[in-house]
Amino acid sequence: MSSESIEEVLGLKLFGSGEWVFAGGADLDWWLIGPLGRLERANVESRILSEEGSIWRTGSYAARRHGRFFLLASSEEALKKAEGGWLAAQPMGFELGDLMVSGDLLIYRKQGEGAVLGALRELDGHILAEGRAWGGAGWEKLISEANPLPRPVGDTDASLPYLRRSAPWGPAGDPLPLAASFGQKNSIMRVWSDGEYAVYAQVIAPSAVSTSP
Image 1: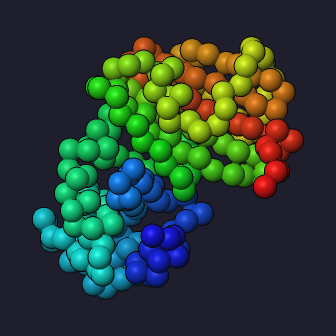
Image 2: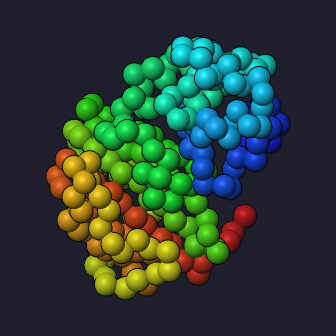
């Protein structure tokens, strides 16, 4: 699977726009969710998804409607796996804007009743990792499994460009309290949590990003 092959089948430019969320499984299954309206405008055949319960098959891929979005999977079997899986596990109605960076790389991890959904992107040489965790095992362990960036050490009030500073909203619509802020000059991480739900944001500056092959 490549981003180019997916874009060719859908007739859309997906990656880099921030409107799409992609998840890949260890068994090579993958899923992509995006705005249904854009897909229907780009590909006439996909309009079958406007019919309740319909499945759109294109090549080896399969898609179904999920509210205002479509869910595309690597196969019809993978599409069935999404029922009751990471998509249904969202603590709020699934909105692409809930992921703060809306990155093209999405990482999902589940442990018991807890889960974490994170995104990663690059912006002007800075590496951004942001996401949310909920339920079960507590945010520290869940975030360590979902965030691929090395966690900074120490405690600092330093700031970096693109680091989220304002408190994000929790499921109840209230701002989450700051739970942790640590790092050093070139790598900062902040976590907001009410105990059950957490949001994290981390930025690594260009000077801290390895350029070795």
